[in-house]
Length: 115
Image (cartoon, rainbow, N blue to C red):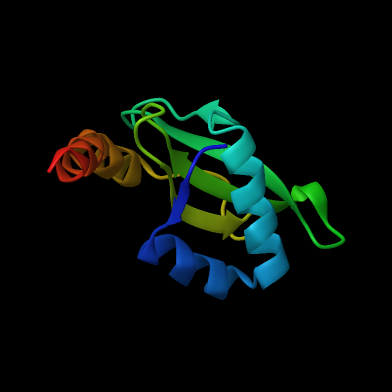
């Protein structure tokens, strides 16, 4: 099982989207078992979009979780979450921001572990 880190941005989004503690833990557990779940989002430097069912909504009406996993030596980072009815995808600006920062995130984590 892979370690999973819920970033501050993710936790803020989860609260705003109305995810319960049980739903959050279910997402963490699923991604710990399958860190490469979902589809890679083009133009982001490796971010993935994973669909999760919301309580009583099914996957189509549920949540979209944006994750980043760059190898077994670093955790899965949960970056953002949004309800499908809130939005469908990332904007080009968001994709560009991820592309500019995700490689640095992985490198910084690896450097920190090496110390």
